Image 1 (cartoon, rainbow, N blue to C red):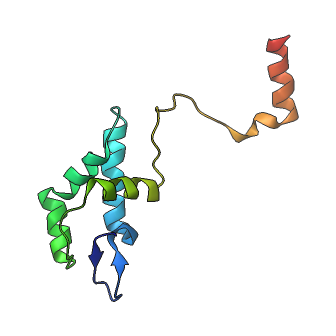
Image 2 (image 1 turned 45 degrees about the horizontal axis):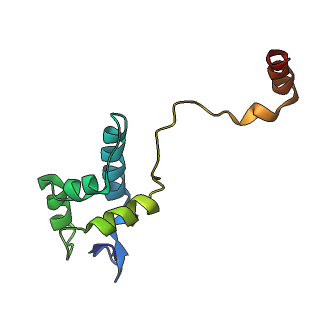
Amino acid sequence: MFPLHRFGKARSSFLHDEDFSQAIQLHLQSIAKDGYFWAQDIVNFIETPEMQQKLEESGARKKKISLWMAQHWLHCMGWHYGKKKRGMYVDSHERQDVIKYCEEFIV
C-alpha cells in the first residue's frame, strides 16, 4: 500500500497529500521534457534528503517505496507508458468549417 502519514486520519496516503503529489509531478515533468523516465526515478526522488525530510516531518512510518509502488503511483497520477506525442490535438476538428477546409487539401 501507499506510505502512510498522520494528518488526522487513521490511514491516509501521501499520494493524496497535494504538496507531496505536486512535488512528484513537478519532478516527473522536469525529467519527461528531456526524454524518458522510469519508475525507478520516483524511487530515487523519494530517497533524496529533501523528500526524506518531508516524510520525517509528517510522521511517515515508511521512508522508502518499492519499484512496484512507484509504478502504481504513476498509474494513479495519470502517467502512461509510451512515446511522447509531438503534436497538438484540438477538439474542434469535427466542426463543419474545419472539415470543409481540410477537404480542400485532400481533393
